[in-house]
Length: 496
Image 1 (cartoon, rainbow, N blue to C red):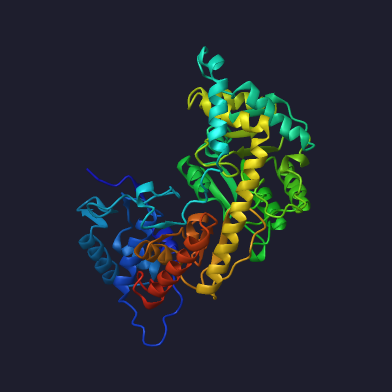
Image 2: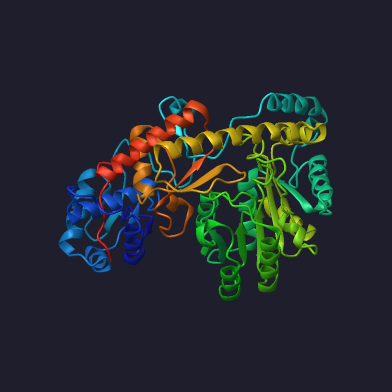
């Protein structure tokens, strides 16, 4: 019986491999043999989770043709991978990817490191900050005081607690966007909201337009749901949306859904202006595409005088085109798994009905905690603390990276939690692998793209500051030296 659970074609594997090209080797640097470069390239894709474990690889002859190398080179690479435990084979069943015994399975997303590893590893993988105390403790205490009446009920509120739905609706209304509680569904974080939206609007094989780059965990959620991702490149220099490209994709591909982050985009940190928002909503309406606007970063602006654009849904007064996703996870604390959807009442009713077959509802105690924050003004004070902390971390990280890695390029964002960095011509995947060896965890650019894009980038979140930010930059510089010297991974793979 075959041990593989999925397969990858020769053309797709070749594209992923060639996206890993490192910058040209310097004088005196020895390039590895072609078979070794190919084996290291496949190994790196497995370790990154971009080729899942138990994926059947193409036959030797097919891959050799796609890479324009000899079959002997591919055969030697496969043999090397088998010897290292990254490939298993069986006559008649082919060869499939594996990990050596004792190695953890690679992450497909950006899961946080276990707390016990934080002493030896600086985690730049997850864009999340510690809780803004004392507001977390006060919110939980306030929730406990309000809990007794709810404890006498069954505790299932598929649409969310009425009090919290009303409070969220009132916040939109106060911003000039009239909203009824019937337009709000409380979810288990923004990921829960996106999962519900994708299952309601897009079946397996349906097209979904996404920014390129985009948030890695959402891209993976959509892949797991069987959706076909249609990437839409951002404007030159990642300075915002390219509206001409968006209009073309919406017209030609006719995607059922489009997913965007207009406020301090993850990972680039870009803030879309009002004209872009209006134009994209108009284009989505004309194409019949449902536009999902992720607003999880919308409150994390650093300059108190910044004139923030209106919400994307403000340009959809009829409510038929835009669905908004919000969350307490970025603005308050990732451990507070409360998100919400704002949409037309009929959409909310459909989402609530479908939820009966998923998670039934969101924990009551956490909903009460968020409601307490919003009712008492604690939310605003906690968000101010969060902005101050993120701004200080951003400034510390920017200064440290500029000092230790002066050839790395980036724009300093006005808010959010992420810095999108062009890594001086180095492979982001190899930097990520080398970083694990020197004690810093950083996600590579391809995690935020489709089919191997953004190999020359890494994402650095504003999650550490002060001396830790300085040490993180020192370790990143050490990882860069390993990659440059050829000791942080393989050299170039064969070009197609």
